[in-house]
Length: 261
Image 1 (cartoon, one colour):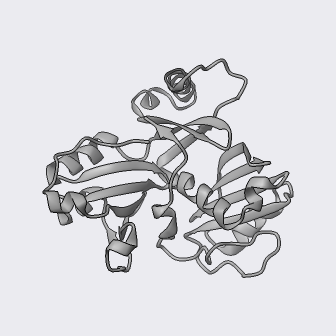
Image 2: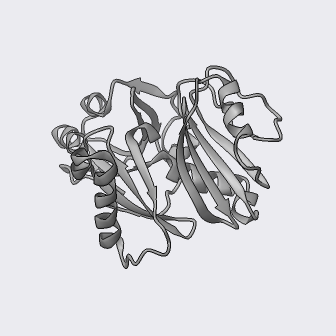
């Protein structure tokens, strides 16, 4: 998990629940204070970016869900002799530099643990120091920043327990033409892949699903398709219709799997 030390806002604002924010490549959505029982429900509001949101909400607190467009994900081989997060981060840094060049030397990394496996998230689509600077200037408390998939996975496992118990299961996190594929076996993470669709039409997602190995249990969540996902498809049921510009709000109130910067 990435976080930022920021100036402490006024005591009344510190006690208010944090805003649930979703940051993507083309802007930021604010789903309002979470948990919602302490504040009046609000329609999601779009901002040009995190800096613009901070300027409009000085002294507030927030938690930030990061779109897959901003991240590279590494699922580490369980057989690697990596004793702790420091070793995992160092190994991932070298691997990312090998494949992505010297730019990867400066990407902020966060170690995570999910489904009995360890992995690394690399933040490449936005500068972490710029996010931190925006928060400091506005006195915003950035309480956490984590990948959106890490919020989606525990949420859908609660909604559909078979994802955690089936011999083989799959969650697809849809973000327009980017799909994060999470494969599980008996609740243990097997694959974490980022896949690109040919378009944001439902037919493109259907083509991806048709080309994947069958599983006993599958589910999709997300947004960004040009039209609603057909309801009732046995090959891939969905939470929500997967369409529209706004990411689903429930992800943002979920508890992520363990992460450490």
